Length: 373
Image (cartoon, rainbow, N blue to C red; front, side):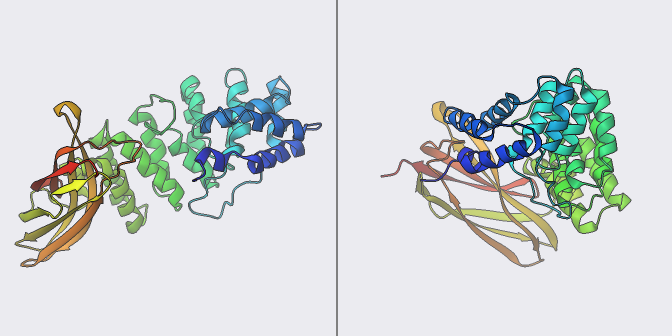
C-alpha cells in the first residue's frame, strides 16, 4: 500500500528531528514529551493540520510572551538550505514551525520581530503561507519589507517575495493585492539567475493572467525587450506565465510566443478507438499541413459528458513543432481515461475531441465512453 503524503512528511523520524532542533535551542525542552504528544495527535489530522499541531506541541514548552519566545525560535531553526543551489530545494515542512509561531504570536504587537523570524525561517522552509497574514494585516509595511527582500542574497528570500504575494497560491488565503502593488516586486525579480525564483514569477503572472491578461502580456513583452534576462530563460518564463491564456487560445499571448492564430493550416483528426471503456486509453491521430513554413502549437480539447446532459471541457498539450511547406505533420496520442481519478469523474456517453492549433479549433471528432466490462 502506498504511503500517504502526510505520513511521508510527518512521522516518527521527522518529529524526532524537530524535537532535536527545539532541544538544541530551548533550555529544558522535554524532547520525549514533544515526540509523544505530537505523534499522538497525528492520526485524526490531515497534512496542514499536522503542521499546526506540531506548532501547538512546541508552543506548550515555550514562553507565552513573544519577545521572550523570539530568541528561542531563532536558536531552534535547522541549518539554512544550501544557498548555492538554483532549484528544487523546497525544504522540509517541519521547519516551518518557528515561522508559524511567529505569525501566531507576533502579528499584532510585534510585527518587526515576527517578520525577522519569517525572514530566517523561509531560508529553511518557504513562509509563503504565513507571510500572507502580514500582507493582510499590515499591507504597506509588509510590501515595503518585501521590496527590500527582493534584492536579498538568498534566493529563498527572493522567491518568497513573488510566491507569498501570488493571487491564487494553492491552499493559501487570498491577500487581495492589486497588480499595481505586485508587478513592481516582480519587476525586481524578472532578471533573477535562479530558476526557483523565475518559476515563481511565472506562476505569479499565470495567476494574474486570469484577471489582468493584457497587463501580463505587456509586462512580459517589456521584460523581453529590456534584455535583463537570458533569451532562453525569458522564453521559458513567458511560456510558463502564459500557459492558461494559451490553453484558452488568447491571440495576443500566442502572438507573443510567435504563433499566429490565423495561420493558413489544414488539419484532420481520426479517432482510432471510437468506443473506449473507462480505465482504457483513447487513441487518436491527426494530420496537419500548411502552404508555408510556420511554427505550430498543437493542443487538444476533450468535451466530457456529464450527468443530466451537461458537459465539461479540458485542454491538453500535444506538440510544439515546425511545419514545412508541402509537408504533413502526423501526430498520434493515447490519452488515458482514468477511472480512479479523485479530481474528475468520468461518465459514459458521447464525448468530443477537438484539435486546437495556435489557439484555433481546426478539426473535431466524436467518441463514445462506456463503463468497463
